[in-house]
Image 1 (cartoon, rainbow, N blue to C red):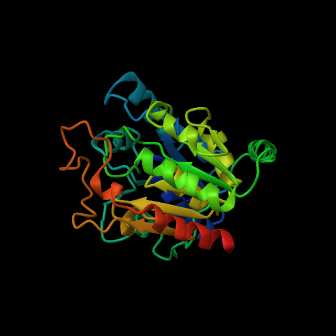
Image 2: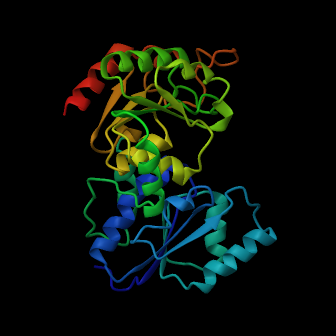
Length: 329
């Protein structure tokens, strides 16, 4: 137990999945230091995921696109300085964030260093060992949602037949390629699921992908929620589902942290690094270049193609076999 640190700031501005992966770190800190005050600074989009967390005393919003030495940055630094933190764990070690910490006068800090040979959750936990060498790594992730939102989701889903399976097909237009499954394969998968279990398919995704994913409306007994919910509303529906299937994405890791059965589809991203941390299945492409961990796929770069060959290669039948095994259990 570190008795010298009574109040600590943790910083991770994004992305959603990364913030979810940091929860195991502060959970472990709080478990070993029950009287410590933990503040967390993240983007305004993601902060609702943390506001109900009993292990966090305060969530501070930040606009990740702030300009260094702007009035916004100076005012934010003043706010952080007024909190009189004993230490900061900087899990977003950019030049701007480090400058903000300097302006806030927080001298006791440690910076996250990315290591590709371990899972992200382990990597974040390792960062905290500088201040808390006795920390034990948490083996599960956990999120806390507003009770009223989960009750609303329960009421909403009571209108539909179970099993309720969420297909998270969003992120097609993401700058990082090789993470999304082709729409035509989602369509095939959804209809084959319905042939077997005749439940309800919930379609999840972001508003930008709405038109591209419109063919998924042809899945039998499907409910299209693409672009129609806030982050917390979407999380609440996920929390009540029987299964979620997705490429490497925020909703995939949210589902895992909500103890929902999950299947992750992996192409360019290394499953050993960003795969489902616990309680799920990672289906990995067998293409020789996987995982390349590159933003742009050399096979579709500067073309009109939306999907990388590594994701196209993942078999619908491989996914189906795991789905039916999970639903039996």
